[in-house]
Length: 151
Image 1 (cartoon, one colour):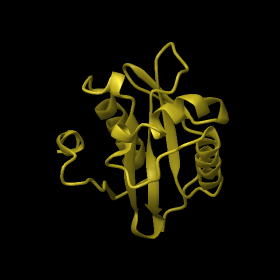
Image 2: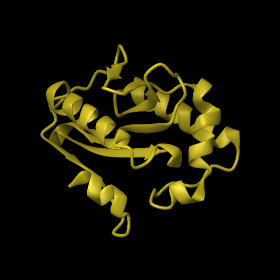
Image 3: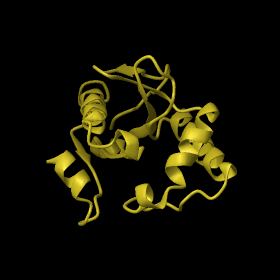
Image 4: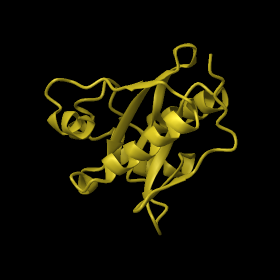
């Protein structure tokens, strides 16, 4: 069985982005994502209707992180601290060396290869640092963008 340890938080730098810890300071940017019905149409989570909804999501993520049960990164462009999306391991199964990946990115940044860049970076982290054997993603059949990203 694996023993995950996300402390200190692993900041990951890619060609165009810095993947960093999500904090309460990201609440407004996260609300923009999580309250958008079009962005959330393929994500099996309630749409945020208040800033408090997003703060609860961020706090739950922090608890999950502190328990070493999962990890999520804020996707930010290099030179900017603004959250444009999130990517992470949301359902981990350390006893099976497995985790589920998930991601969400603002529509202004879609179709630019940024999500693929972030996914590749955390897959590298997952296989090389966490010692995962497999990673899965749950994708709805009509989410063609996500299907194309993953194949």
